[in-house]
Image: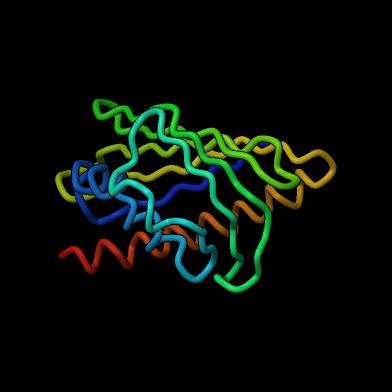
Length: 147
């Protein structure tokens, strides 16, 4: 199943793109919903070929399964970041982030996730919609803090 969640940001595509690649951005936009073990050892910026193995903590309290994130593509020209992820019951969680300019100070932001979790796939798909709406809300908050 594919989940696609889009929003618009009041910042330039270039600013959103450069901000996206930072570890601190990832941790900020997931804060409150998901925590990650070992994140202090992660590099400051995401890059092609980066592999992150981490234990997930729902709401930073409840330990969950081990999760693997492989950054497959970081395309500075098209402003796309693509990762292959998996862990626990989730066999496939392939995530494409795309940032497209709309005007000088606005852009369209898209999270597209390919999900495969066997019989749990519809439930994981629903979770993805909630999680990425939350992330995009945190993104808008971050953009306000950057101004």
